[in-house]
Amino acid sequence: MTAELTVPALAELRLRRSIKWRRFPGDVLPLFVAETDYLPAPPVAAVLSEAVTRGDIGYSTPGPELGKAFAGFAGRQWGWEPDPSQVTQVTDVGVGVVELLRRLVRPGDPVVISPPVYPPFFDWVPEAGGRVVEVPLTGTKLDLAALEAAFAAHPAAYILCNPHNPVGRVHTADELSELVRLAGLYHVPIISDEIHGALVLPGATFTPLLSVPGAAEVALAVVSASKAFNLAGLKCAAIVSASPRMARVVDGLAVEVTERTGHLGVLAAVAAFTEGDAWLSSLITTLAARRDQLSSLLATQLPALRWVPPEATYLAWLDASALGRDAEPRDRFLTEARVAVEPGTRFGAAGSGFIRLNFATSPEILTEAVTRMSTLST
Ligand SMILES: Cc1ncc(COP(=O)(O)O)c(C=O)c1O
Image (cartoon, rainbow, N blue to C red; front, side, top):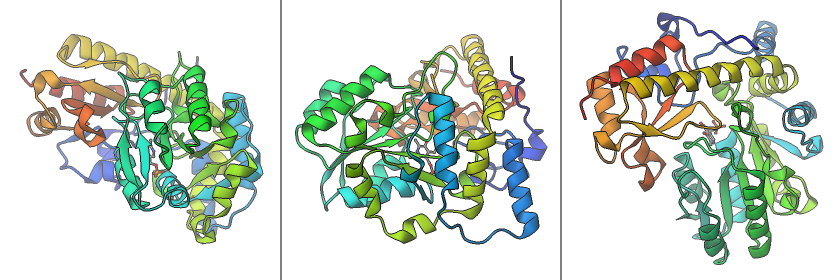
């Protein structure tokens, strides 16, 4: 049994200067943005402090290390070994997806997404010149019949969230196989955002899309160590291709796209993917314990909230519609309970009455947050 990770005291956390700790006043418990409260994995902290001490904080230059490190990690974690030479560094997942869309989309082309979904999906499509077409999830699952109808109209691309933020679903190998079949049949390229792939909790099995037979011909993945290892500020992600056909989409990217990656981000990602397995396993143990804790806290203190516990991620998608519609539950939790969560409406219309709560924190902060939230009357 791996030990749980600890979290610094709240006063220490409040010294952090990232958005999680700066967005709201000091009396608010911030459980909104997807940052964790854990300290970095020791191999990551070591490589970063060594680089800073040496003054090794200049520009990154694309090299083979990131591809090799990710291929090794994917092989050990998921039994899938991409070709390291088909791993291309980019600034972050958002940049990776937008730049791929720019290659695939002509102005006004439809691009399909499945809300409720990570809010920037709604922005990345128009940023690249496309038009969002929504095929909502059914419950927490992909609606494959509705996706087939949408794919039959030949959209320029489909953006998959695998695992799916905010509902925390790990799409099954069968579901992904069917998705790949549809993409092949209707010639719809898939961009699979797999930033949460390393955050699959006990009980579920992650299937990288490109490991599905046939996917290599129709799909690209965008991956990063940044979510599991909490490295968002360092700016490093990677696009993965697995066939000459899809590699041509990546080859067309401007060279600057890869050069805009953070040097410290690459160093940290290589350390995380190469030497981070033991720490990651403690993180997963910790998150599974927080998920269980949240389950009991909700059952005893906030039974008005309904949820399907996530199979992956540290994000709880909570139906708070007993407390109001649209963004009202989030606004009430913020103003009346001083707990900041994401309003469900940011994830699409289906999020009305929902909130998304980040439970990657200490048991004490989680208890305090739910206790505060439970003071609201329905
Ligand atoms: C599904 C998903 N994609 C992308 C991102 C952001 O990634 P990046 O900071 O690398 O753009 C997040 C952040 O939470 C996310 O949940």
